[in-house]
Length: 245
Ligand SMILES: NC(=O)c1ccc[n+]([C@@H]2O[C@H](COP(=O)([O-])OP(=O)(O)OC[C@H]3O[C@@H](n4cnc5c(N)ncnc54)[C@H](OP(=O)(O)O)[C@@H]3O)[C@@H](O)[C@H]2O)c1
Image (cartoon, rainbow, N blue to C red; front, side):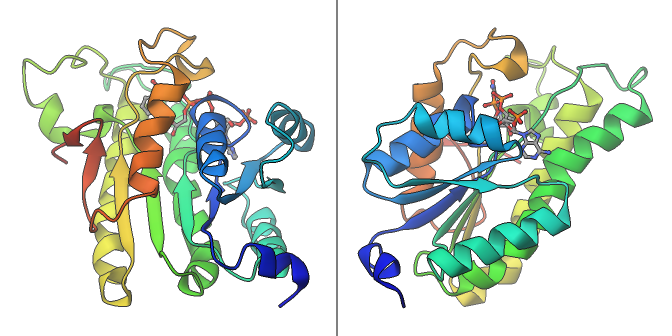
């Protein structure tokens, strides 16, 4: 163990993918303000550094090159965390895209494929790359940032507030992420992992042209609440409660 490792031996170490803007950046800030060491995942070095520079210098936030669809950069990212910290306590799969909200009869396979690459295959690859570090960690938490738009149960309710948002690519990608959450939580249960999904809520970010009604701070607080609490495993959280799958 190096001297640098020793300084954060007792407090949690987290990785936030897509940490350079939006909810991810808000989350990085809140976790770091709580005294955590936070790896700010960014697929673009300059955007990652600019995000880091927007935060108070005294926070322990470290930019990590991380493109969730590229296994090679994920391995390099894992190697870098291992070298610096030797472990990871909490992984937050936050990076996500919503290129369109075309309904099932019109969505293109190109849209489906690219959305799944980032929103589904990305978290699978990130988890697989980071699992050895998480196994070496103490908290063993994985938080998948999903959406209420991924709830098949809510879409089946004619009174669902956001039922009119019927985009096949985005909604079904979050349903698949939810399924990954449940299956992974079962697999890792015996090892003491907590694997959960969380809906940050409809938030004003670039993802929706800033049409969301919540602030980044509010959404990040919901995700941080799941990342920082002992809540068991295999659930889908939202502000103030749980959602049906
Ligand atoms: N905003 C909402 O209303 C809302 C509601 C429910 C759920 N969510 C979920 O919350 C999460 C964050 O969304 P947001 O609203 O904060 O969106 P955002 O402002 O557009 O930020 C998305 C982040 O993901 C990163 N990203 C995208 N593709 C990536 C890839 N292939 N590899 C690495 N990073 C990638 C982006 O990096 P670049 O800057 O390089 O593009 C950016 O940092 C997403 O999973 C989203 O689905 C959002």
